[in-house]
Length: 262
Ligand code: OOG
Image (tube, rainbow, N blue to C red; front, side):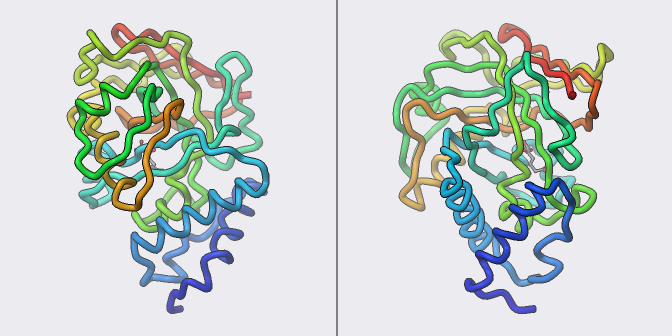
């Protein structure tokens, strides 16, 4: 079927009902193969606006497909961004209710807390670091609404980049004095090492990844606001978990963050 903008709200309801009812759906491009990335971002914006009508508050953004490995896996050359809303924030000590999710996976990330507004189209990694008040260890829980977690770049952008939940550790540090471009990371599942990596996997430096997103937003007249949280992109492969599993991510210098599926 040919895509027209008139379909946007139908696609938004399709994705939101999949999320609410915890069921996988066929990807959007199966029905609209001609959908473009720009149109997918417009759908994402309408999806978040719809959530705002239901009471959600935007609290920042997340980056996706920032590692070369993940880009190669998807056959793409570009990162993606989506929005974080207040109801995605999960608390370490409360656990993640797996029955409310479809097929969740955990990713190790570094969270940035903005100390200043940041907007523009020539923003550099240095600008990002100067506008950052704190960085903290984080785990993003992604939960694609699509069947078997399989999608194209266009599909995943429309689906707000698989965003679902995130957990932030309790050690927040100023980025000054940290070698954020090369922090070692180990992710454990139930006490066994599952993934190892370095923050350099995120486009060479997580602040480079955020600068990319700020410039993309800048081209649309949008930007980051003081107080926003930014998840800078996965450092390794995402790992699936179920109720009863404990995931822990340990960073050099930044400390650790964990949660248990319940
Ligand atoms: C897309 C989102 C991936 C990341 O950091 O790479 C992501 C997905 O794989 O579902 O958040």
